Length: 360
Image 1 (cartoon, rainbow, N blue to C red):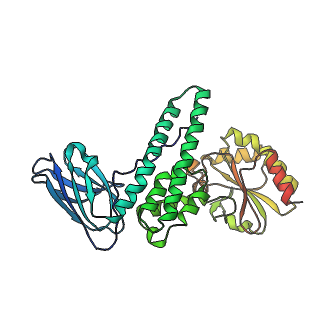
Image 2: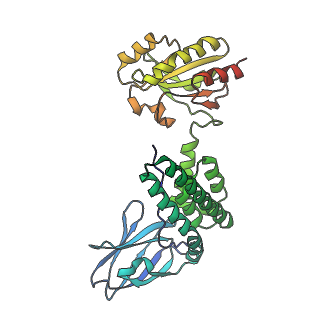
Image 3: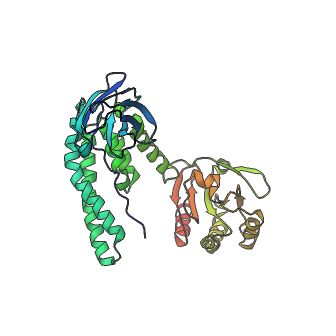
């Protein structure tokens, strides 16, 4: 049973405005002891960007950012911290140490944009997070199904709000942050890509935008409709074999292993497909996730797998499997003569039906 993904917690405030070449944060935090070291760190890596020292609750932090970034104002030997999303702005903080999340942040027009979105977005986001927690702990199927239905309703609202915000603010650095925050909720990578493509070039920079772009690119690797990415591995005789060497044929790239019982059970089906269509411009390339060469070769012989086989004998670290983000085996992809992936994970009768359809 899979656990539901929770939304990432949104920072308390977001500041992002381009125009100067350095940032300056002037803070007054009541209740902050004199000589407390104040530091600004990268919200992702934790790397310290700059430090200062408080006196009478006041401190000054200066530095430069290449792009708008999630940062955290923290205090040495204290747990309190404040999340900010800033660029090279002049920012002021005014608050109390005991109520740091309520600090007033000034100095960025984008802050007002984000606050408007946050007021609308956070209540539904909080309901979604709470529901996910309850669902993950539920052991009653009927109750769980009812809660999941409610979760999906709230999820649809959150995604609609995110889509509306991005469409209305395609140049804002808040928009890629919003997409990053809701990205776990998208069931289709194409939906996330459609929202990302609405961003203007100025917003397609920085950590959040680059992370979303990479997420999309990674998800599309090996997807139906994309060109297969070439790889080379050695065959049973130690000779290098390129996937691209099969161009001009339909090729079923079959990820399997001798130790994989479901793979061995599926092998007769692949044998049937190969023997039926090998004279109709079709072949199979077996990619094994084995570690032991002897076990690999014995399984090839025992299962009568008479097509080309390759492996780097690196188990789950097989380079081709890593390239195509293979998370479980058996797995396969059917590639057409032009090198385009036209189907994924065809098993049992579905493999036979697809081959009959295209290889009449």
